[in-house]
Structure formats: structure tokens, C-alpha cells
Amino acid sequence: ETNGITKPRHKVSMHYNSRVEDMHFGKTHPMKPWRLTLTKHLVLGYGLQYAMDTYEAVPAGKDQVRAFHDPDYVDFLAQVSPQTFSDLCEMSRFQSHIPPKHEHDTVDLGPFNLSTSPGADCPVFDGMSAYLFLYTGATLAATHQLTTGQSDIAINWSGGLHHAHRAEASGFCYINDIVLAILDMLRIYTRVLYIDIDVHHGDGVEEAFQRQPRVMTLSYHRYGPYDDTGHKFFPGTGDITDVGLKGTVGEHFALNVPIPSGIDDRQYKYLFESVTGRAIEAFKPSAIVLQCGADSLGGDRLGQFNLNIRQHGECVAFAKRTGLPLLILGGGGYTARNVARAWCHETALATNNTLPDTIPLDIIPRPEAFQTRVHGDGKLYPTFQRTHPNECKDSELEGMVKKLEQ
Ligand code: ZL4
Ligand code: CA
Ligand code: ZN
Image 1 (cartoon, rainbow, N blue to C red):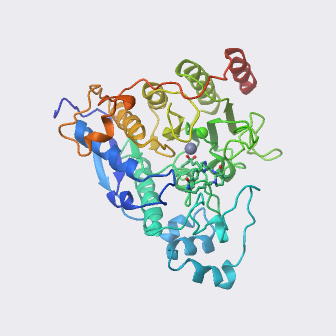
Image 2: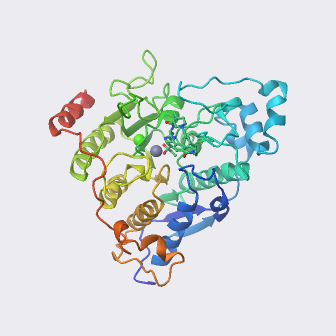
Image 3: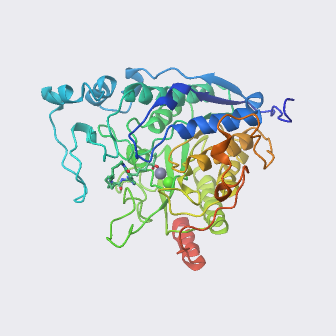
């Protein structure tokens, strides 16, 4: 026992490489790898390293990434930098220019939906190649730890990048580490359940396994018109009627829970527990992958839900109670101090520890990040002020659960 932190009876491992922290997507780009620095500070500050094994991740190999991604795309990602981008684009086999998907999109996109313009969702930035192969390496190491029976729960907060497609980057995601993990798990486990609590639809993972009855994908996400301009909330897919590829053996092995803005803890708990519970009963998974995108928290810069940290964590606790091998991944999360709070809390849950609400500011670097009155005043569990009006009606949520049960 150290700092009141105890080792659980089950084995937990965390996989990480601090080199991912140095990356910058661009000055005002919402994705900030610095949130991982804050997470690390809280995890170490509370002493959770004594409750699990921590492993320094090494980059994934190109061959490992090719298990899902297009070989030309993998080569491109392995070589690309702001300096090499235009030369790589000129090489004949990379010349395909992808037309913008959204008419209001002004940035010029290169091949694979990548771009050097600062307004892009998936910019090409310095050190990007190293970053991509590192977060993927950490996920694959975590997966290996589970499939070899060395861990019961394995965690990679730098992974969970659910939008990447076979030959296309999308929504801040370049390599789909989740798909690679699940492919690897299918060698050992009969059925894998993928649960996605990021505020965005887990489209890349769903698409990859749309014909695969051994993988059930289940995403909870904001769905519907974005604003007055009528644009859909990104990526615009994941309707309740979307249940996998019709006419294939994969039909009925995808579930989507589209949610209006402003959902609160009680409503989310009801939805999550009824739908996930029924999915587990019906599918009988042999392992679970949980994407813990923290942009479903209240006060997120991009999200529109009003979840507090404890309810976000309840989803992790629920998955853990199944006793199945569990891969826990990060994902979105754009208000860095809250991302760090949530993922530290969830690391504690994974290791059966409870943490005091007062952050040990005296021993963590950057205490100022957790000290502003509006953001919890040095507390791990602040109550978020509502930022989006609650557009969820209980009767509609009940209707949704009934529809999904069929
Ligand atoms: C930004 O400030 O909805 C990118 C992206 C860059 C820097 C300055 C440029 C300003 C918000 C987002 C112009 C930005 C225009 N900068 C961006 C249709 C869009 C095309 C791109 O959590 N513009 C695309 C993607 C989503 C769209 C969400 C979630 C990932 C995950 C898992 C991905 N894309 C409209 C937006 C900024 C930016 C500010 C931005 N992009 C917000 N939402 C999107 O699920 C990790
Ligand atoms: Ca989701
Ligand atoms: Zn997201």
C-alpha cells in the first residue's frame, strides 16, 4: 500500500509513451495531446501506478498497421511530414485528390483526407508519423497483454481513434487502433463487444466490422442537426435504424444510440445500462473493448452532453462488472482538465481504488490547470454547469430502448 492506493486482485496494465505529449495538431486545433500530460500527472499524483503495471509503449510496425489499413496509406503515413507532404503528393500513386465532403469546407485536401492547411480536421504536423505509430503501438501492446492472459484490464488513454478508415484519415483520427486491436483479439476470443461512449459516432469501427457477426459495435452519440445552419453533428452517421450491413451475416451486429443534446446523468445511465445490458445478454461477448471518449462530459469544447465524471465512469464500472477481459481506450475530449479528471477516475475504478475529491495539488506538476473556480477549484469531481439545454425527453428515450430491444 502506498498513498492509500492498493493493488487489486485482478491484473491491470497501462500502456503509454510520453513522446505523444510533444505533438501539436496546430495552434487552435481542438485535439490537444497535452491532455495526456495532465492525465499522467493526476494518475501519478494520486499514486495509481502502484495499483497496476505500467509499460512504456513502442511504435507499432507498418506490417501490424496493414492488418486493416491500405498499404499505400500506411507507407504515406510512415513518411509524411510538413516537409515531405507535397513531394509525396506528387508521386503518381498518391495523386488522388479527394473532393471535400462538406460544401462549407474551404481547406484544400490532399490524398487520404490529409492536408497541410491549418483549418483541416486531419492536418499534417511535425512529428505526426511518430505520434500515430506510438498510440497504435500502445493499443497493440495493451491488446497483447489481454490475449496472453497477463492482464485482465489493459488501458491506453492515448488510443481510441475511432473515425479512421482503411485508406482515409477522418475527424482527428489517422490510424484506427481500435480496429487493429479487435482484429488481433478475434484470433483468441470468439466474440468481441465494442462499446463507444465518445460523443461522436464510432463510424470507422462500425464500418470495418459491418459484415462480421463476431464483433458487435455499440455507439452512444450526439445525433441530429448541429446548429441553425442545419449541418449534422459530426460525422452525421449512426441513426437508430443503422444495425449493420443489410443482407450480410453482419446485419444486427451493430447498434446505435443517437442522442439529442444536453442529456443528463440519470437519462444516460438509464440508456447505457438498459441497452448495454441487453446487448451483453444477447451477444454473450468473450471480451469487451471500451472507447472512453471524454467529450461526452459537460462543458466539453466540442461535445453537447451534460455528463458528470462519476456517470462517465459508471460506464467503465459497468463493463468491468462483467468480469470479461477489458481493453480501455481514450478517444475524444477537448476540455483538457476534465479529460484528465475523468481518465484518472476511470484508472482508479479499473484498479478498485477510490480517490479523495481534493487533487493532491502540492505534488502534481501544473496544479494551476485544476485550480480555477469555474472548473472545480482543485477538485477531482466538480459538478459541471449545464452548457446545453436538455433536449432529451424520458418518453423518447424509453421508446428508443424498446426499438433497440427488437
Ligand atoms: C478545427 O479551430 O465537423 C480544426 C476543427 C482546426 C484551427 C483553425 C481553423 C478554423 C473545430 C474543429 C476552421 C476550422 C474548420 N482549427 C473545421 C466538417 C468540418 C470541416 C472542418 O472525438 N471544419 C467537419 C470532427 C469535426 C467537422 C470531429 C471528433 C473526433 C473524436 C475522436 C472529430 N469535423 C467542420 C469543421 C480549429 C478547429 C475547430 C472541429 N472539427 C469540430 N468538430 C469537427 O470523435 C477523437
Ligand atoms: Ca460514441
Ligand atoms: Zn468525439
